[in-house]
Length: 309
Image (cartoon, rainbow, N blue to C red; front, top):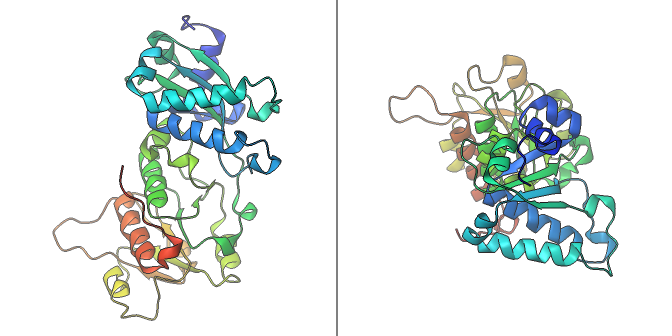
């Protein structure tokens, strides 16, 4: 593809906007890391001929991939994955359903720049289907750890929490109405491929969530700067609250935190001690501390340690 003004290019470029994503049901994943994870997920879903290998609707699915040949030379691991995908996609013995088929095209730098939202193209743009996932589709009993993003406005923070939740071994990420779109380009870049690793449910009603979890032996903890109960106390097991229990962490808006009504829906509020003079922590940093405190306290079998690449 070499025409940056073509209709296909314009349609892909519209995915940088929330309206475009909502209309098409698609989002952009730019750069080698998210594209790598999108290809891996596609292969796990379709490489096997068993029907059980088909996607379960919890994760994004690859719809199209645009790439510059030079980018494949710079990232041979992505090139190998793409070859494996082509082997399945163009196998004359396979008849993939529509949801398994991908549009693949080489593209010039100008086309990739016109399609993407990043300031500098990295040579890869994947277009993926957004899973229509809500909390009632998930099984609460299968969730040992999950952050609940309550009105987070910055897509960078949303993406960072998704990435941190993935690293901490969480089983899901939940977002209430009013939160930034987790499928926005900035959120996807900040998550560095984690959108393809764990379910992301949007439109979660906090009151309904709290009522639902009360029936499943799960606790709701709210990160709150003025709470008397501190994370340090919980880590020392000096309180009746056990970090090892299945936990949903409420993380509030960057500027205003959690409202009194939202705090009331938590079983306990927990503060993070500040030892220096900073007034507060960034919500993504606070979320990382809370998630890791729970992850390290829970059964190691629930969170197998992976070496860093």
